[in-house]
Image 1 (cartoon, rainbow, N blue to C red):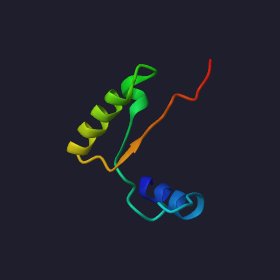
Image 2: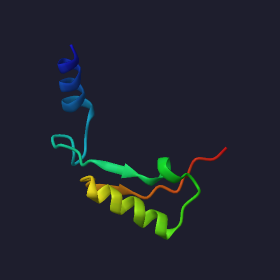
Image 3: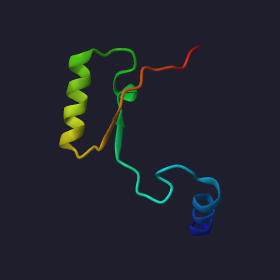
Image 4: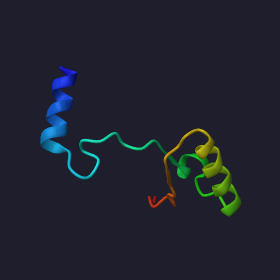
Length: 66
């Protein structure tokens, strides 16, 4: 059932460049820092991610409000 669901989702609902590709492993800095970050902290997180094989670094500034 799970395989059928995933096939349906991939063929009928997914779109974009990654539809039929393996997605990159990523790290988002938001979960690690929230609003408490600076350039040095960002570099530290990115370097640690690179050592772990992270392929994509997402710089998220916490756009949610409330």
